[in-house]
Image 1 (cartoon, rainbow, N blue to C red):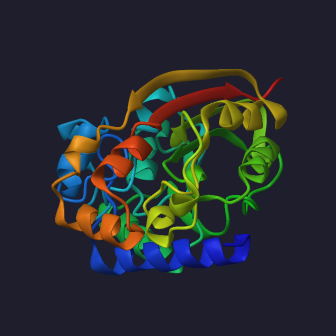
Image 2 (image 1 turned 180 degrees about the horizontal axis):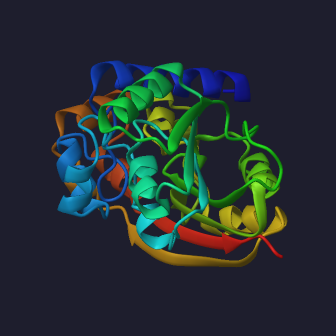
Image 3 (image 1 turned 60 degrees about the vertical axis):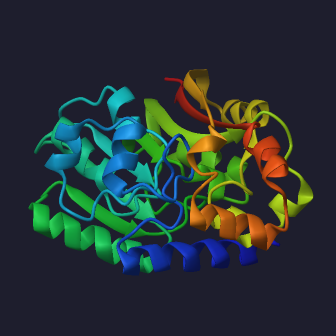
Amino acid sequence: MDEKEIKKVVREGYAKVAKQNSSCCGPSTPCCDFADTSKDIGTKIGYSEEELKSVPEGANMGLGCGNPVALASLKEGEIVLDLGSGGGIDCFLASEKVGESGKVIGVDMTPEMIDKARENAEKGGYKNVEFRLGEIEHLPAADDSVDVIISNCVINLAPDKKKVFADAFRVLKPGGRLMVSDIVLQKELPQFVKDSIAAYVGCLAGAELKDDYIDDIRKAGFKDVKIEDEVSYPIEFVADSPEAKTVLKELKVSENEAKDVASSVLSVKVSAIKPE
């Protein structure tokens, strides 16, 4: 698939999720546990019970692979930008950290997700959060305008990750921080997975080798690039899921082949700083 087709497929897939108010590939530990509820997924990937209760119903859609806000060390008055904000959960958690003097901006390329996030913000009465329609390769934000960028299992969906990190660097203020949770690989995926629409929407086919991912961040100009945490993907969590079996059938692969693919998948939390 070319870049335009990939974006169309991903946009359509997540539009369905927004309309259904449920996870299409709810990543749990770390990527896709189809059987779990959004709440179960949320607790497995790092959100506390208190955090999940504090956000509006529908904000947690079970689409992440970590809790970037927990590691971002947000401060009162900071401006935060969330790449691929979905239903808004990370924006709402960040809102509490930066307070009334701060601001949180969520960016998503799916109109249905933006509508849903805005509804959630209205339900929760969030005055310091706004959501903007846009692509994370071309962020709708000014140069040197935000203090912190967060993202949760979204950059792996972007066909050109170098552009994503370059534009993140552009909009961060000097000294600004990047904190992302994402899916990366320890080895290359087989071609049948790379070509799979289901695997793309399921945040797998677009994933990049871990070393290449880190290199992309460094080449964008960031310093102090660190992997704060990484977790292997346990295939046993989805092996018996009816939805997972459907995907395997569509891909025409055996369970052993699927396990081999899954063994290369990692959920990572990465931090970096834009030089002063």
